[in-house]
Image (tube, rainbow over all chains, first blue to last red; front, side, top):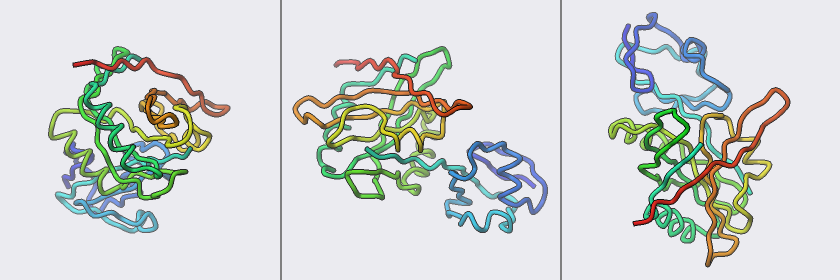
Length: 68
Length: 144
């Protein structure tokens, strides 16, 4: 199936999970990554079970924070 | 790394950071990165600090997503982020260093310690096997 990851169209296995996509995309420090699918934020606890669908638009957003 | 930023963008950051006091202000920077040791900041995003304190900042992920899409739509790449230190100097704190997860990013810190003379510096925070290495980057403000 075709999905869009960070603006790039990609061919991936049908029903790929978010966790598998994170691994496939070699996402660095995945513990600090927020994932959105079609502009909806997905709870990190669902990364293993959430199956992506044809045409989904996925974004990986790195947590950005700090303190004085 | 040699980074350029427009005076008008710096002024906008200062205005926003002053208006957000006592909380820390934050946002993203975007522009061009030809990967030749230079970076050009073309746009500064003023985003919400969801922590709403003077001690921490976390960028609102919804606004972050919107900004990333805007960068892409306008042919820019993410270059890093910026935040203010309302009461402390322009240098990464221990927490800034601990939470910096992107060795390629530029981290801009705007100090309002002296509100009449805000100080803006850029840093690279690299991950090393034995911790993290902080390096100050050259930041050039383009006047006019």
